[in-house]
Image (tube, rainbow, N blue to C red):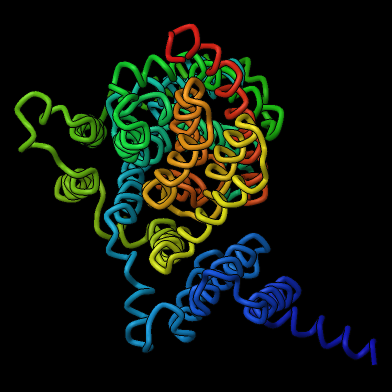
Length: 501
């Protein structure tokens, strides 16, 4: 009997388009969660939504099928179960709400724009320039990418546009120059390392400037409200507070990733001469490269709100509008064509899976799951009787690591941050409230390190295929811990020196 079961399992495992073992594990988890008693304070449908969300994440981690298919599964299950509505029509409307999100379309269009850098050869030329400057070792190229991210951060309010739309195409071109390509199975040469550096520079720089990512002004507002306006961070005071710990994180990050995900090609002694020779072979910059470069600069100026700064807020444009303008310019100038747009599979794959995850996160908030979680956390801390230091640590850590439940930093901050700050003000002595607030502000960006769906930048870089999901989550957790420790230790001392507490 056992032999027959094993034979049947092997047969089905060979013919079905999914991994049967992980699929069975995922199914057991879903059924177990659905049969579990509904926690006090939650409605049955809200708990059903939690079960669907957690099962989807497990299915993605276990690689039951491609991530887009797992996202589609979540949409189907949510619609059939009707956990967000009273009819299947209402449920499918809820399931598709996120696909009109400007954030998702910013990600998709950024991927499409990056195709132009590859097609025109401009990306390769820029990559060769980086190699000629810092290319004697792979780690040097990593620092070059980190510096590029840091220089752009104060002027680029969209971290997705910066890390995914500007730096990532350069990183891909550098990797391809060394024949490091996921399509060839050679991503481990330098691509995995450079992609991780490309990504992890993004959360650090987002923490360093109010204007480096969209939710930061909301963080400033929440801190002011929680402290009754006694702490209102200006652009300068935020940058000054985050300067030293942020720079230290940027210095350490490429080294940590070098240890956790070392590139196969470490030394590139001939790379500088090779880069010079290849640039010479390419000849002068072509007209299409000039159009691509001009579009690139236009995007940077508009994403940095330069027209609005010079001529008034009437010229301020949403980052997604700017991305569409750039894409349209590339199409009408013939730099890329419509077939390029249609054939960019990674963009459309990202649209499906990231849209589904954002939808699930939004529904968790709408169904009261996040409020329930925050309230329960506050009550547990008060009941535990831990000291103020333990309280501060718990609040920061729970806030940061609960980002595993979110596909948007803005949604996470909107849902939980003010509640956590308010609890902190109530339980932490007044003289230590400011460092707690600054840690929460830093944590609101550091939490982006954790997953491949943590913020808009992550699906762009993850979708390029250089990093496996296991490596992404492992390195993400480690970098989150390292960054938090640096801000907690060095940051606290720095803030004391500055006189903030």
